[in-house]
Amino acid sequence: MIEFFRKLFAPTNSSQTAKERLRLVLMTDHLSLAPDMIEQMKRDFIDVIAKYVEVDRDKIEINFEQQDKALAMLANVPILAVNRNGGGGDGGKKREEPATVEAAAATGSTGSTATPALPRRRRRKKSAPPAVAPSNASPAPAG
Amino acid sequence: MSGRRIVVTSGKGGVGKTTTTANLGATLAKRGHRVILIDADIGLRNLDLVLGLEKRIVFDVVEVAEGRCQLRQALIKDKRFGDLLSILPAAQTRDKDAITEEQFANIVKQAAEIADYVFIDCPAGIEAGFRNAIAGADEAIVVTTPEVSAIRDADRVIGKVAEKNIPIRLIVNRLRPEMVRTGDMLSVEDVCEILSAELIGVVPDDEEVIDTTNRGEPIALDEANKLRVVYEKIARRLEGELVPFTNFDNQGFFGRLLGVLKAG
Image (cartoon, rainbow over all chains, first blue to last red; front, side):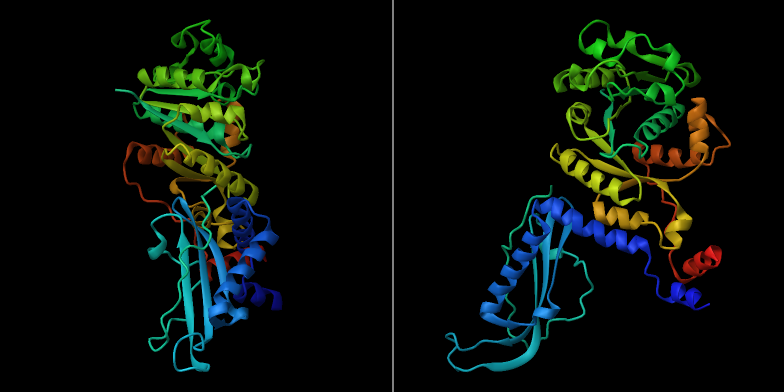
């Protein structure tokens, strides 16, 4: 009976597993990069963003997605704070409302209308500083 | 006017390329089109067998390529379709490199001059046989099943065919709706999302296919066959008609409930 309800309310079925595994393996195929290289690329990407703003490393989501004929990299980077000591004038670190950088880099022209792979839970706050959107994050041709 | 040249491919073997080619071709012939099916699987000839024409072979595609006979002489006309359907068999005792891409493309072009639809049954793999099969095509149908290996290979093939800049359409073959409902099989929606290709047909898994291929009888001629309508829908979509898809993906709460109850 417990098994019955478990299956009914928490359907962790194999089709979902298949979908996730396929996503990952196709990403590797398309980028012609080994999985550990993709991880390294993600770390480097995050490091670059982190140079300018304080990011929530645990909540960063980076995915690759096929959009028509182009492969797109979609990044969702929550920003915890903005460094204002660079040349901003007012000096010192100022805590801001958490903001989010949503970057989408695509090889095609569909980048701006991209549908993200994951539902966006964090939305950009209106009071937040302008988001940094890296637009040339290593696109790869659709293999 | 030259006919359409459509390659049926999949990457992975055994997903139903030949069955799809045979039945889709037969359905289009039944609908009044002139159809030529070319078996590009040199060395592993099978299209003739699936259609029950194996006893009538005289010449093959390699002999046409080598100029040892005319295309018309090598074509086997299927009398059951009032000669609207004919096949060009592959050579059984030759290698894939017995024919070049140019020769193959030329044969496909010739065939398109005397037919409305030319289907090329592509061999599995992405090597020489595949390159030959896609050489003369101006459209592609990729056949896949809802399994990880077939989908990965389909993705690879889609990438290869996309380099030619020709339209690519997808057939999801051997779908088991009851497994999709219980979440134990990837849904058509999932497959299309992963492959991001235009869907042209969904063929449910059906034991009757084995029966029809055993006998060498195309599904189009079997009035009682459940899949006859399925292939007709694909044929109509190819003709350009907007035919709604049957919804096989029904994994809501009640779908799961039903699945769990069924599974015990």
